[in-house]
Length: 262
Image 1 (cartoon, rainbow, N blue to C red):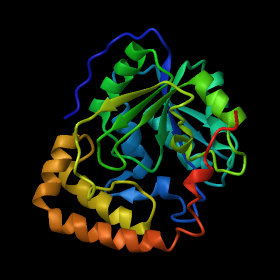
Image 2: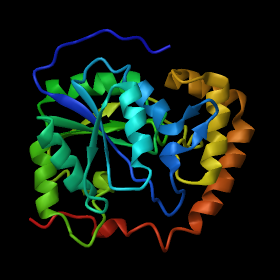
Image 3: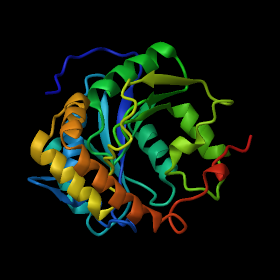
Image 4: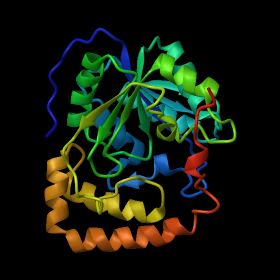
C-alpha cells in the first residue's frame, strides 16, 4: 500500500499527463479497460498518492472522445487541458504556464503503473539539487519519470530539431547543456519487466498484474510477483518485441537526430 504524508516545497511542482487518443499502435488506449478500471484512471489514482506535488493535470488534444476523458478527470477531481496534438512539448508548456507551474513531472499516459514512492523522493531530490532536470534511473521500463524546470522545457522547445517528434522529450536531454540530477531507484537487472501500454499485448500484461496486485502496489511487490511468474513475463516480453519490431521503421524515429541546435 502506498501511504501519504505531506511535505512542503518551495516550487510549484505538478504532474502533467500527456495523452492522445488516436495512437496508430493502439487507438483509444487511455480508455481501455484494465479489469474493473479504465487504464488512465489507474494512473490518476496512483498519482493522487503523491505527497510532493501541487497539481495533477491531464493534457490532451482534440478528439471525438474527449468527453470521456473529461468525465474521468471530473470524477477524480484533477484538472483538464486541451492543446496541440502534434506539438506535444508546446502543449506541456502552455499547460504549465496556465496553471503557474515552476517544474513539470512528465507523465506519459502509457505508463500507468509508474513508481510513486520513488517519484516522491525524486521530487524532493530535484528541489534539493537545484538542477535543471531530474531523471529516475535503474528502474523497470514504464515505472520511471523525469522532472523538468519550465525554463528548460522552453529552451528545448525553441532549440530542438523541428524534424523530430517532441513527444520523445527524454531524448532531448543533453547533459552538456543541462545540469541533470540522477535519482537512483536501485532496481537494476529487471529488463524483462516492461509495463507500458503501447500494443494490444500490453493489455494482457497489465490485466495480469492488476488482477493479482490491485491498483496501489509498490515496485517491490511487482518485482516479487515477477520473480514468481518469471516464465510468463519473459514469454510476453518476447511476443511484445516481435510486435514492436514491425513498427520500428514506420514509427520509431532515429535517436541521433534528437538534438538541440544551439
